[in-house]
Length: 109
Length: 218
Image (cartoon, rainbow over all chains, first blue to last red; front, top):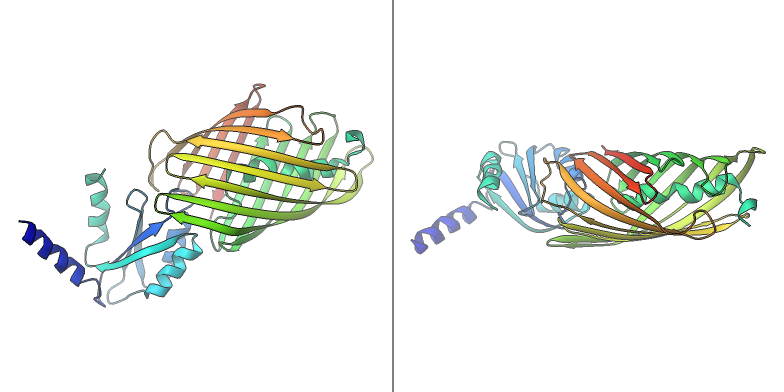
C-alpha cells in the first residue's frame, strides 16, 4: 500500500514539468491575512495565460489554473507574488483541476 | 506652547494616527487603498493612496479635526510617501518595517492662517493568522510645534479565516501623545472585520467615545 501511494505521488510529480499542465501550485511564505492577499489574485489575473486563481491561507497555497496549452514561467510567477508582497518557496505543475484543489480545503483541517 | 500651535499642524500630526496605525500603509503593487475614519468625535478623515510597487506608495488625504485640548477646528490637505525597507515573509507569519514622510497645507480656524508642516514616522508589525501586534511612532514638526505620537496595537483572531470568509479580530490599542495634543494615554477596544477587499473597524475609547474606520483596496 505504501509503495502504491509512493508510485501515485511520483506519477503526480511527473506531470509537474508538463507544458500542457492545467494548474500551477505555489507554496508561499507570509500568507497570513486574507485582506492583504487580495493583490495576489489581482496580479495573477492580469496574466493572459491565467484562467482562475485560488488562494488558501491554511495551506500557504496559491494555485493558478492556466488556459489550454498556456503556461506562466516560474520567473513571472515569483515576480507576481513578489509584487503582491510575498515570497514563493516552491512551484509545482499538476493536472489537478482547481475545483478539486478547492475541494480539498474542506477535507483538511 | 500648545496655544501657539497652528491648527493645520496639529491636524497634520493627528492625521496619520488612526488609519495607518491599524493597517499597512502599502497594499501591493498597483493597488489603490481608500480609507475613511471617524475618530472619537474629534476627527474625520479620508485618505487615498496608490502603490506603484509593493515597496512604496504615494497618497493624499483631507482631515477635519476638533482639538481635544482647545476648541478650534482644523482642516488639512496633505501628500505622503510610504516606504517598506524590510519585510520578513515567514512560513506562518509576516513582519514589516515601514517608514514614511509627508508635507501638507492647512487652514487654521480663527485667523485662517496657512502654514506648511511635515511629518515623519515608522511602524514595525508582526502578524500571524491568530495574533497581530504593531508599534508605530509619528514625529510632526513645524515652526510652531513638535509632536511625537506612539501607538501600540495588539490583536487576536478568535478563529482562522480564509480569503473568502469574514475575518474577525479583537484589537486593543494604546496611544501616547507628546506635545500636549491629548491628556494621558488613550486606550481603545476595537472590533475589526474584513472580507475580500473591504475592511470595517469600530470600537470605543476608555471615555466611551466611538472610533470607526472603513477601508477598501482595489
